[in-house]
Image (cartoon, rainbow, N blue to C red; front, side, top):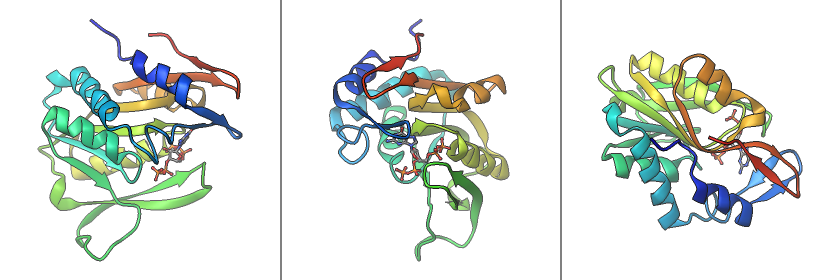
Length: 196
Ligand code: G4P
């Protein structure tokens, strides 16, 4: 059985990523501001391979940069992709599940919301995100699943910042967290990945 680490992603981080002050890994050239369309589909297929036997019915993420990878996973799993909204908009239904999320990066608390129409107790849900740092976004999405009575199957993450601890905390609680690359340490000269 193959592990969950994706060599091609690690290589892309090394060749195209840059480390910014404040422990921020910039991958705007292929994962965030500009999306490498073929590569994001490869990530989606890898996530689908990892969870193919889990009978997933929905993929869930939070806007905005999680959406591309979640859609790629949804396409590969042939299931809908839902994303939690961070800002109320006029076309948002009134019946929503909500959770408060604190962002360390932006030092603010914001509310995320998912329309009740799109999530039910019959769902088996995979949470997908581009980054797992402190884990607050994922924990907010987990609270929404609890509220909906939906089953959390696991989390699929492109880049986990292992040194921030959230992935291991979730694993210690028995949650299946599969990260395609785990950065255990980084400086502006080097990035060290966790082995399988
Ligand atoms: P958490 O969600 O794991 O708790 O992390 P945190 O609050 O620290 O992260 C806040 C935002 O910053 C998240 O996006 C997260 O994806 C992103 N982020 C965290 N670390 C890095 C990093 O090293 N590099 C990059 N590129 N992003 C990082 P967000 O605020 O929800 O914004 P967005 O999804 O709209 O971009």
